Image (cartoon, rainbow, N blue to C red; front, side, top):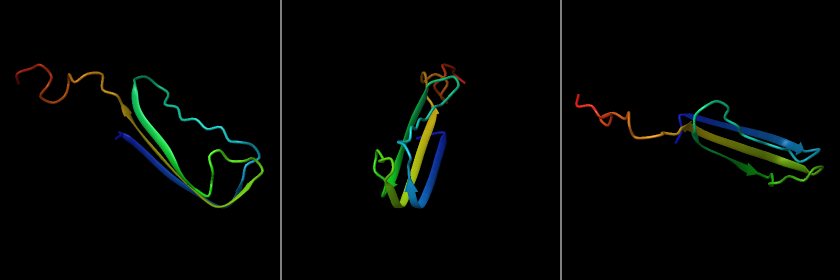
Length: 83
């Protein structure tokens, strides 16, 4: 699924958060979207504990989005014309 696909992988030997991170995914603009996102974490709990040191961390992030279809009209062969 998706007209736009994004994947990113981040690795760290050591990682420590001074406070719990706040994250958000937004899609500004017009039109309804069908979207999905998730992350796969290794050695990093959800939520993290501020001040705790995590070692050998990997986070793989995946995002997919596309504009939602309002109707079936306009699809090839389904536009109401005979030609």
